Length: 170
View 1 (tube, rainbow, N blue to C red):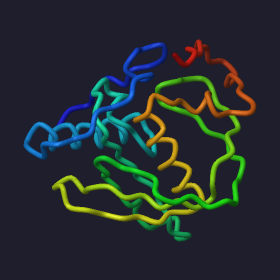
View 2: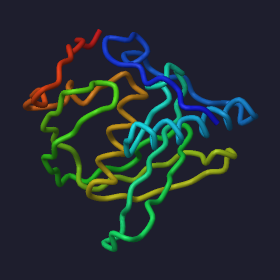
View 3: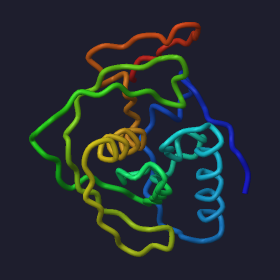
């Protein structure tokens, strides 16, 4: 396992649609392991393969869904994720991104989503998520389509003491 470089805007991979995964061999397993290690080291709660300059449809998310703060966070690895259902109820939330350091923004997203995809071994999975976990999944799936949270944000601002430049969508 290795910590990979997280690419930042205006890197071109962040604005491209990622390719579907068709092979579940050692290369993919190494990528997933590296993504988990990179996400944890950043630290972050989610990471999409394009953020480590790999244009494949792979996301990793690690978040404590439990109200027990001592409970360990649950790791989700989803290959070829697709949001198949979204609630009509939406909620505004402040998001940031490891690929856009120093910037946060208010983004309105569905409160509940259902994702379908494959696990790291290629077996089908389905996840129903709500609240922050649903927001994280939507944020990461957007990365696979070349969409950044700043594209959806109603308001964006710089974190005090940080600098960055936002790249426009193609």
